[in-house]
Amino acid sequence: MDFGLKNRRALVMGGTKGLGRSIADALAEEGAVLTISGRDQATLDEAAAALRAKGAPNAIGVVADVASGEAMDRLAEAAVAAMGGVDILVLNHGGPPQCTASDMTEADLVKWFQHIVVSPIRIANALLPAMRARGWGRIIVVGSTGMQQPIPNLALSNTLRASIWAWLKTMSGEVAKDGVTMNVLAPGTILTDRTRDSAAALGRQKNISFEDALAERMAGAVAQIPAGRVGAPDEYGPMGAFLASDKAGYITGSMIRVDGGRIRGMV
Image (cartoon, rainbow, N blue to C red; front, top):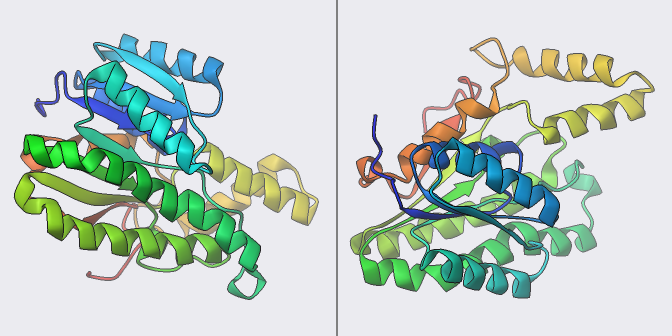
């Protein structure tokens, strides 16, 4: 299916690996022009070359740290300068460390509020006016099923992602009449670097090998997933490309889950 994304201009934050890369890959295959961000220029250059090989007419990488609001301003400016504008914005960032609700500290809340809430809203606010003026735009938040059903031991993520979800739900109602859609794309358990990092942490905690820890973590997850397996990154990104397309123009203010059926609630 042709999603009509050829030469649409997309900025994908955290586009070198994991879920951000999965969306960037899917957009590249649809012929979108891409700017991706990350923290290492060499890694960005390698990813951009791979995206061009997948079909992106052009793709560049811009170093930007989501911990800095000023870096978000520079990223927005660089993307507009490189592509002539931004039609599709994918808000993505690394996740906070695991912790229980009782172990959360004020310092961690303040630090990660910048990453998960303030910086994404700042760059969206910078790029939204032009989308609204053109009468077309797409904003996709790489979320988490913890936004709907809190995940044990991910209290920071559960708490702060709820804030960005509330912002998106509110803002989507304000910009829908201007042809701009805003949606959350929420993964379940996808085998990404973050999943592997969590397994490594479990291995250190239990003094077991990484392989045993990963198998234990996957077994625990699979037991809760009706599909009977964890997801692959390339099963996530294509839904992002669909949400970015004209064909999804009547979907906004929604959370779309890619979770193998893990969330059992009906809303």
